[in-house]
Image: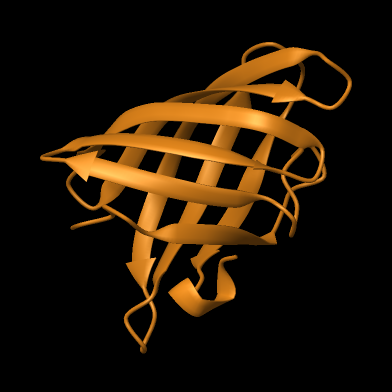
Length: 115
């Protein structure tokens, strides 16, 4: 599995989620280690660090929100591939700094769609 250089946007979000369709996630990968940076919508800046474990992506995340608050948690993700080769990440997250958990879906965007 190679997520290096992929850019994804949110196509579905949980009621307890903060990301939305304006959020872009950019991933870098070296071996089984993954670094992600994201922002947009109510998230000013976010970062995730994790690793690939089999067919899953497991990570911790922290983000600065528009309110100025800093929040974070943990996620376990299914990494799927669509018929056209684009990645889909189904994230099952649990907040560590606030109540709640849920599922977000990120779909890879084509390079031409990322400005």
